Image (cartoon, rainbow, N blue to C red):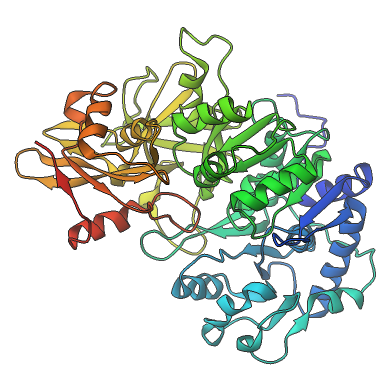
Length: 542
């Protein structure tokens, strides 16, 4: 058997990505929006300048005693400071722990203690959120604060971010690390029980970054300017900051200003070509700022929850911008599938393909399995739970034993789907949200997407509720657009022309907003609990 003569021991770590972006793309820009108020502006720095500051941060953290393998938490918005931490912490051999600023206090304290964060870098504007749990943190030795704000609750001995960087010089000597070393960690949103930690390796991040620049993904290139709306604490902002640094795409960070008004202004001022966001953010832009000039965009990626047909059509008709659906999860870095229409559209419309969950991308293997774990065919009809494996898929949770989540070397996703022969996935439900009515299976996702196709509907969530005759039936929870009026009878009649008869909900409730998880997904457990407590005003139609 012949052996390879290639440099197979070359380590795929973040360090060569960092060095490459620093040298080859030295003059590319990182732009941060500084405020939505009148007169607010931007800060701007080149990749070379940000790299120098990353050196200084690495040196400062080393002086504070951070060693290889130590966890450093970030409690920051999407901005240049966070990007500096993205680069410095992993390259110095430590682990970047991006803290979800939207977690409940008890969950926030849990993830910091569970990860054993040694240092936390916090934005002063959200210091009070961290202060709520400061006295519960058992491993944090230093807190570094960026900016000015109310930091009184964080205790004594605080360090100023810019001051500690100014005391150091660029030119930090980064250690050699192996590609299997952990470089970043992110905890799941913790919708049930404690959040679980996912440790990304240098290799998984390297491979995922390469894939983001592929035409099989969003083909991020140096001709692009990426508006990073997805939080940097959520699966590394879908991997776009690292891919942009590697390929030389400008980065635009909005900090906390994610409402339609400031986003419209940022788009006008910076002219991005790409962005990624959950449906809630894009719906806000479409419905409240339809005059936004999006002519600079070539693509918008949407994910986090199923993307409604109305949103896809709305962006095309209003902005002339295609929306592509992406699918993944914290455990998958996150992108596993993306919904570009295929070359052969097989008689379907472009929107018909875009509303599908997406096509599995190279580097990821996918199968669907039935209730006893048997793989099902890719025929577009058979249903099963999605299981995936690949170089950027986690094989276990950080210091938590959860064998039910893993099956024979595959990650069980909890998503129920069918797969077409050409690799297009169509998620029909979360396993925990499946509605079985009289032995027949009802897709809450399909129902939600269809209901949200009504021009008067802003959001819709469908939950299963007990039924004396059918065991369980779907109930529609609907949010109308501002100024719109619509009755349950009218909406059910409209829906009857667009879905199977036995799927039609008898129970309807109109609510002001669909509850969301900390990463913007519909939180149906909150709706189910509210219904069980009798807090929803439900109308039952004959």
